Image 1 (cartoon, rainbow, N blue to C red):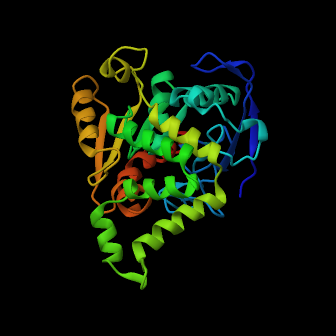
Image 2: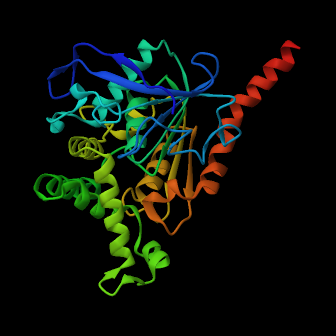
Length: 335
């Protein structure tokens, strides 16, 4: 695992009006900072900054000679404040409802500024990480060349907010909150068809179906590696994605994003619905030329962005080959 690095941000006022002095942790992979195009990767709800390498959660997409090639790019990944991965006690956030997705994006923007990064070749993230990517692009419309939100949206819909509300109730009232919240969440991340295909009503033993065993496994696995305070906070961040809050309407905000926008949706996503993304694309295409949409075809629902790697790579390769082509062209011109 790459070493964690730290940035201390002093006297930062979050949207609720409270002042904090957070210590933001991050990792880099591939080329050294400022020696190659930089890609910011935002992790999902129970993820972290360990994107590639040992225990890397996106090794199928990012790495040496992979779709996003660490031989050619610098990969930068922050830990969302309070996710617990850095084991910094003062980063354990109990007053989680004071925070929003925009707070996290602002912290990322300040850290990027402190790292003297003036341009990001791409920002990519799935689910809540993609929502934070939208928020960062709205905050810094000139910073990002390629915005790539995957299985997410620029806002938390009523459906997402409703399920976050249920998650919050479980996290605050259950006798085994992490286990139960995770089991509930897994039914949102997959589809009935996906579960039927995987289990076909088979049993582990006379008293237990395999689907029940699978849900319990995921619940217990998260309970063993994650903190309750982190889950509460991440659920709150997911609930508060909205690039239009205290601003104008969506088209006014999004049309100011100068970089290319590549929306990647999933046809069977039961959480961030594909229809919402297609509506965003159609509306935004009327005011902004450099917006594209791709749809992953899968039975697996929201989690398909962590399963259907071949389809995802097919959508991403043209984006990440552009920087390399430009570099090759420059080398030829110099030669």
